[in-house]
Image (cartoon, rainbow, N blue to C red; front, side):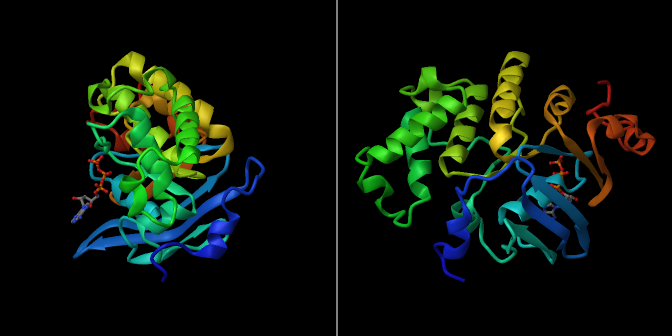
Length: 271
Ligand SMILES: Nc1ncnc2c1ncn2[C@@H]1O[C@H](COP(=O)(O)OP(=O)(O)OP(=O)(O)O)[C@@H](O)[C@H]1O
């Protein structure tokens, strides 16, 4: 497999497509760690224009699932297709280049760089000469223009020249969203984007997610139930590495099996 990109796949990215188009399909993905089955036969379908939330108690397998979708972990079994092409064997870097972007549970930015520099670097990471990213700093106008647009879309327009390290926690998470956008992600995999946020910051992030949703497919792992039910079109609840139930929010809210899975957990279904 080429280290840089699958050209056939790259050519499909950026093609205007209708809402509802299926972008990513994971079929029966399974991941074992020695004798532990962290995900078993998990199926996920991500259409453009929809937010899919992965819920589940601690240790249920949500991060393992998102790691397999992003390419950070190879599945032990199962397949993942993006826009009809099999990407099961692509690395995380290759998936980023074809249009699958992710954020991590922990904030992942360059704290001494400005907001604009962080996002400009993310934009340039999609290009095929990553070793030039630093040496040609600030010279590529296209990357700056793209970075500004993504920063605006992520709701950070007023902080474009701020040093990233002095932003609030919530703003740093918004910056990460801008960095994912700058890679032209069609599919956004977001691992707990609201973690550690206060209510104002959470509300702002929910607005950002709603704004991003129409033109992309978004998969979230999130524990904040108010936010989950504010943005989700589909919710998949995992327990012990398996899908317990998957469906629209009203179905999940009414599910006795889901209620029972959450008994004694911090994350409650009081929504
Ligand atoms: N790299 C690894 N090596 C061994 N076991 C792992 C590894 N990563 C995850 N696991 C195990 O797989 C199971 C699922 O973990 P995972 O992190 O996917 O759950 P989670 O639902 O994301 O949990 P949390 O909400 O606590 O983040 C757990 O039992 C965990 O200990």
